[in-house]
Structure formats: structure tokens, C-alpha cells
Image (cartoon, rainbow, N blue to C red; front, side, top):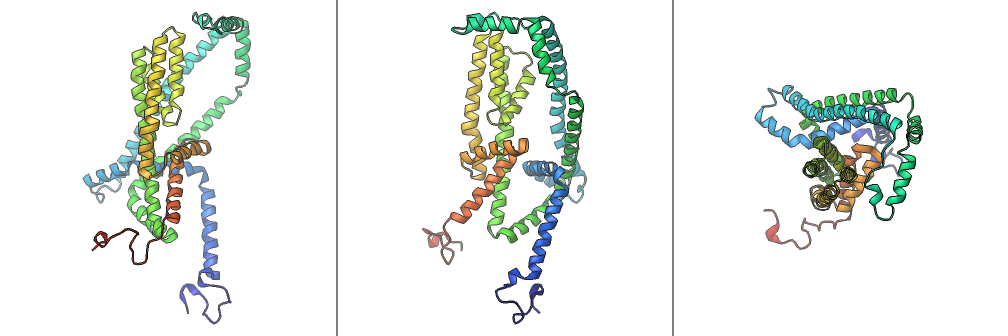
Length: 380
């Protein structure tokens, strides 16, 4: 008998090597079918699994420090549970605050729209003084937006596009997001508890599937996650805080919510300008031209430094990714996978670049010496 149940050499069909034996092909087909079936079963929960993996990789260095302080044998359940609860609170508290503030502002917005339908939108005093186009714009504004009847018809057409069952649709979507969030935390708990064993298994699997380069590719993907979390999330929040000081200096109302919104939008490339350009236009519309220009100029300066120096260094430097592939990974991932793609894009690009370097780098010379190496540089 031979290994893996292969037929003896004299009975094996010509041209059929042991690697392509019937038994091995059957195993591959069975494994592929089970993988496809398993992915189809859990595909609705794949976002939760991916989010939990990204969060676990991002906070794993901090978790390992906590493990050294609390021996895992005594705290196999307590420490993973505490870490999961901390992550959940870090995510829930800002989202809860944003939801409460949004609900309050939505009430104010609805009351404001009701007033517009009855009284119209007054023409700004500064509009007529805009050189060249100010006078015709003021005439158009007064004829279309300042007239209550015209505004009533305009808002009526706008509200007609909102489905009558939009509240039910939003409720179903919110419930689905809450379920995904709950499964994310549940998965995160098990990743914290069994992370070491899972890492060893993944290393063995990568070595068997991809050879010596498997572990190196995994390291680049993990570095891409760390770099993306730092370069996108932390830098984006820092942008919101810094630009928030400009909001306060210019005299904008609701500085804290505006700074938080700017930080959230700054996580997305080219998202922060939407916030500070809107703030600048609001200031100009209310007569604070210098403040509006100052907010826009300061915001552009902060975004230029962050996007051209800080983020490429953090993301590309951690995973050895060129800036172009970092940008393509972020934007392409965002377009195809939504917010999750912000992290998936650079990770996939890191794996592809790692494979490309493994396949295109010069093969080592027999005996283990690289070109240009010396005897002194060899390990003794």
C-alpha cells in the first residue's frame, strides 16, 4: 500500500500522478463544496465576522498587554468579556450620542421646513452684492424661494419622493444593523478568548497552502489593518478635533457635534471638505466672511497635511504599500463594500503586493547566498 490510499505503481493509470489521484481530487471537491456551502450559510453575517476580525487585529497589542497583567488561566472568560464590553462601549457611546443629537436636530429641521412652507425662505442680504451674478441670483431667489406658494409646491414635490413606508424600512434596517453589531461583539469575544490557538492554526494553514511566503503575506495583511485603523480612523478623528478649534474660533454654533461629524467624514478620503466647506458657506451666508474663509483655508491645510504626508506614511509604511495602491484600495473598497471596504481594500492590496514581490523578486542563489552578500553577513 502507498500513502493516502493511492493505488500501487503498477496499477496506477498512466499519466496520473499521486497528487491528482482520485481520492485527492475527491477530497478537494468535497472541501471546496463545504467551503462554498458554509460561506453561503453565513453570508448574511459575514460583515459581523469581518468587522470582529478587523477590531481584534487592531486592538490585539493592547489585549496582549492586559493578558500579561492578568494570567489567562485565571481569566479565560473574564478578560475576553471585559475587553469585548470595553470595545462595545467605545463604539456604542459615540453612536448613541450621535443618534440622540440627530433625532433632536431632525425635529428642529422638520419645524424649520414647516415654517418655510408657510413663509418662504428670505433672500440673504449679501446675495445681491456678489459681483456679476449677485443681482440675477437675488431676483431668482425672490421669485422662487421667497414666495411661500412656490416653496410649498417645491417642498411638496420633495416630500412626494419619500416613500410612505420609509419609517418601516428604516426600522428594519436599524434592527438588522443592531443584530450585526451584536454578532460582531459575540465573535469578538471568541476571538479574544481563542485568538492564540486560531493564529497558530492560520499560520500552519498558510504555510501548507502558500509555502514559506504564506506567513509573510499574513504579516503584511495584519500590518495593513493596523496602518489603516491608525491612518484612517485615528487621523480622521484628529482632523475633526483640530478643525473643531477653527469652528470655535469662527463662532460656529454646535461646535462639538460639527467637529465630531467632521472627524467621521474625515475617515473617508475627501470627506472632511464636505463638512468644513459647508461650515464656511454657513458663516459667509450669515455675514462672517472672514470666519468662513478662515475655516475653509485652515481645513484645506489640515487635510492636505493629513492626506499627503501622515496617512501615506502610516498606511503605506506599515504594509510597504505605494501610496497609489493605498488610495485605490481605500476608494475601491469603499465603492464596492461600503464602510467595511475602507479596511478590506488596503488589506487585499497588501496581499496582492506581497504576492507580486514574491513572484517577481530574484530567486536566491544556490547555497543561500544573495547577490552581493558576503561571508561576514551570513549567520554563524
